[in-house]
Length: 441
Image (cartoon, rainbow, N blue to C red; front, top):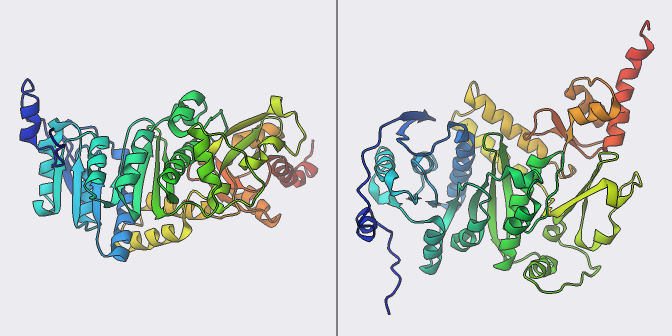
C-alpha cells in the first residue's frame, strides 16, 4: 500500500505527474509598486485595490511577531506573491509558504520573493489550498498566520485552515460572495455558512457577520473559539476580509456546541440558562420593514421575536441567521495597528491618509454599545420625508441625547448607533424645526 507523500509538490514533480502539460511559457512582465516594493504581476490575477487589506494583514502579523517572538506564515492562494513578499519584508516573518495552485505563476512568484529574501526563509508550492492545509495538519506543521484570500464564499477552507493554524494564532479569511450577503441566495448562504440570510439594508455588514459566524461554528466543532480582531469590507469585488485569533476551548457554556450539533442533524432542546458571550453573539438578526428597527435575538428568544412598533411578525419582520452579532473589531488591537503604522511612516498624506481614516473608523465602530447594522442616510430621509443636515450634525444630536454613534467604514453615507430608526427620525426633525419657524412661508 503506497503512503501519501507529504512533501511540497515541486515544479518537476508537477510536470512528471502531468506529462501532457507543456512547461509554462515566460509570461510578460507587468511591474507594480506597493509600499516601496517593486514586483512583477505577470499574467497573474492581481488587484491593486486590495493593497489596504494587505496593509492590515502585515500590521497584524508584525504585532504578532513582536509578541510571540517568531512568525511562520502560510499564504494559501498567493497569486503573484505580493502578500508573501510583504510578510517577509515588512512583518519580518521567519518563514513563509507561498502557495498557488496555478503552476504557471511559479516564475513570477520566485522572482518576487527572491528580490527581498534568501530562499531559506520561504518555499513555493503549487497545491490546491485544501490539500496543502490538510497535509500541514497531518504532519503537525502548524502556522502562526494563515492567509486564505479565496474567491467566492471561502467557507470550504475554514475547517482545514483551523486545523493547520497554531492555537493563539491568526486566521485571515475572505469571502467575495456578495449575492449571499445581500440575501439573494439564502439557500446558498445556509449551505455555506449555516445562516439563512434575507435582504437587509446593511447587507455588506451582514457579509462580514456571515463569514465570522461560519468560522465560529467550524471552530466550535473542533473544540476552539475564535475572536475577531478586525473585519474589513471593500466595495471592489465586493471583498469581505476578517482576521480571527484562534483560541483553545469552546465557549464556557455548552450552548454553541448544541447549536452545531443541531446543524449536523441532532435534535436540540434549548434551555433558559444564561448564555456565554460567544453563544450570545451567535444569534439572529431581525429588521422591521414597517419602522426600520433592527434587533438581535438569541436562540431561546426565537419564539418571542417581535418589534417595538407591534407590527405583525409574519408580514413586516425579516429574520436572518444565525450570524455573528458581536463586535466586528478589537479596539486594542486596532490601536496597536495604528501606532505601528505611524512608526513605519504609513500614515499621513496619500494612501496613508486613507489607512489612518479607516483605522480610526474601525476603532469607533468597536464601541460595545453599538448594535448590529447601520442607519443609511437615504433611509432616514425617506422615512422622515425630509432633507438631511450633515451626518456630523445628526451624530452630535444623537450624542447629546445619550446614544452611542459612529460612522461606518462600510458605508460612507451611514451611521452606526443604538438609537432606533423612529427615534432618529424624530431627532432629525427637531433639528429642522428652528429653520421652519423662521421661514417666511
